[in-house]
Image (cartoon, rainbow, N blue to C red; front, side, top):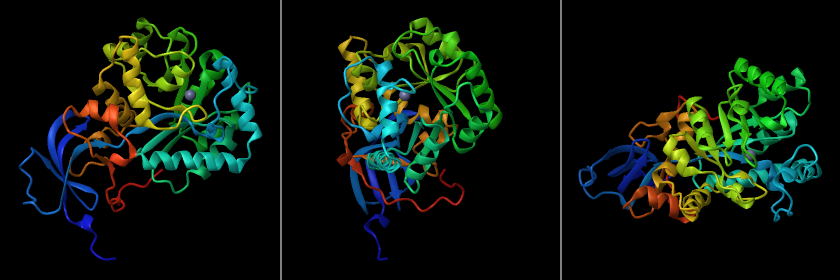
Length: 374
Ligand SMILES: [Zn+2]
């Protein structure tokens, strides 16, 4: 291999937006890694290498998907969302059952490849269809350049301990439909098994109708998805329980709903962002960000761009126990993303304007001797 132009230093002058917030800065790269950051004009490159004006952020995480759904991309038939996605006989589950393994595998792979091209570093997926569904996702994601965190779901009710153990051993946790779709006994059995296995327990909550928080917060989950119908007091209860929430504003909007992101920000919830069912929406975190931001303006309940940016690339890394991956600094485990965007008002730029062609392709860093990919 000859000398690559990327071996020369690359200097991004503009802004950093990360776990510490936004600030004017330069970031110097060599071979895809950050070697220096500092105040603009103080870099030591003396004009050598490539110079770019832009914004550097940690790579985002798509914190809630159902990528198996990507086998169908048609406009959803008009029926209540519950009938669309209800297990085991709703529209979505019939589609999953009627689709071949290879069609589902290819659809998941295509969705993961799209996310990779869009700079996403990790995805948290809910996979239905029991252990077979988990195995199918693992096969589809083999060798992809993003990390996958997979929440499986046992099929048998009442819970078959053998099946639950088989799903858990192959997944990162269990993701349930909702508290109102499952008995208290099922939820307790699953939460207990997740704790014991050192895995995580998550569920959808207050999506189409309000559910009382005591029902979805006990047993305590690691994550709740939606809260589109939660009241202010419900949000306070979630915060007090120290439970993180994933919101999916496009998915909710398709069925006429909107989570109150401004209230979540005021209450101080740890909020993450996901694109939900891949049958209804492309798994693009950038589209989700823009819609989340603009959507709140329609109801005159604006959320801040800074809070949304954190939901895409700070809170998920904290939730995964890897806050350092949300820090742009030399030696940080972050996978930095360089965006060719004006560095004025970085959070607003990132939340409203990112598209694939604005992402600067860095040389992939050499493998980290300490860390393997999951
Ligand atoms: Zn979901």
